[in-house]
Length: 72
Image 1 (tube, rainbow, N blue to C red):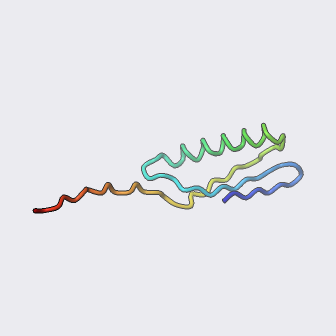
Image 2 (cartoon, one colour):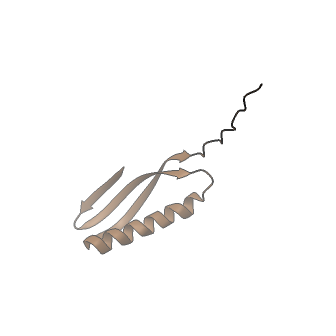
Image 3 (cartoon, rainbow, N blue to C red):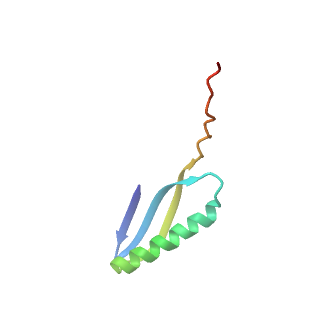
């Protein structure tokens, strides 16, 4: 979910994300912050003072299923 607090035409945005296991969390969070801030300001003209990223969970890869063979 995303929450936006707009006060005096300045936005503070809170984003809750799930991150894939094994990624560099600080790096991904910075990229999300920059992309969201730029997109919102370009599309709306509203200044964004903060983009807060909350890591809601870690997504782990599903273990590969080994096909079982029928024994005769």
